[in-house]
Length: 417
Image 1 (cartoon, rainbow, N blue to C red):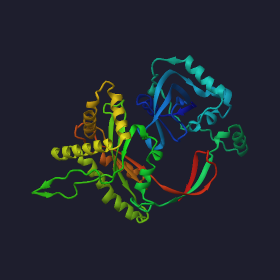
Image 2 (cartoon, helix red, strand yellow):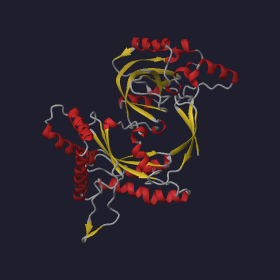
Image 3 (cartoon, rainbow, N blue to C red):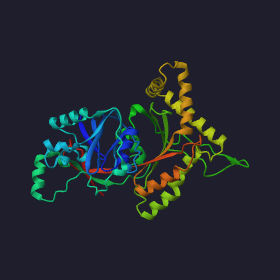
Image 4 (spheres, rainbow, N blue to C red):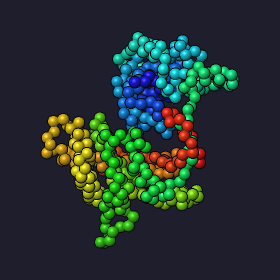
């Protein structure tokens, strides 16, 4: 277990979201499951700690308004509260630049004396309830994000010796290259992501998810007018990801995966824009609409029933996946009888299509503005229960080629495009 400080800057909103939604976000992948985190927020120019917790499991749930800033998010457990105390007391052992030593990048605190000061002070001020700051009394201030600006070159050299881990160590350098396309057998986006899915997405742990990377296995039901199929209605996702979280009201979430790739052929911005607006967005809208209340109920029900049957058949075809699903059901219902398990799986999956469905886009290029636009479009579709909307998440995956390896133990790399 490593001890770290997570600083929410001046955002009380993020501070409270972290504790109420039981999730913590970081700008790097250093923090890991089992780490002890002291949560801090800057109020009236003081960095105050009012809670600590243990990091639990990786998650892709990022409820903050600036969610794009956090590359690493984990659920939290064992939350403890205290009357807020000013962590600048660490300057007693960290000196003038204690903030750089102990806060920057939520780095692990290596000095036992600093860890002991935090623990002793927290224990002394421990409380049963979360302290609520008086927002009306807050002083407007210029945000410096707890980073001390140092312009003197000699001082920087001295600090580098005093705080060795202030430096970003590079593991290697890489050249960004293009995927051939989406489906190429060697450099295809879909194939490479599927083969390395759980290495790419630690927020989807293999023991809590089921990936069905079967292209064209799932097809939505179309409908007919005057005996003819209506074109542009049927659609086929590239795969399905089922997530399990027993803490949720509906423990399963269905993700419809769509792989898209501009690749080597679509390099001009006009071509990319045209493809995004005429192909990608309409395709994602068809996914969302197929399970939305805007689609005829009979058609929607047929699609769900067909897909659930195929999911169960896929589960039953693999002993490891079958065992995984059975264990999930037993986690929810410890007393359930064996003969009732498959029926319960069917019931929960059907319910997920009605209440907990997400469209998941994996693509080689997507701006924040484009991602926001697609999210707004997809989330405008209400699900069958009428109370929730289709969710959306977009991930950009790039292919890079090694230039030089420098240090295999370091965390960061540089890429050039």
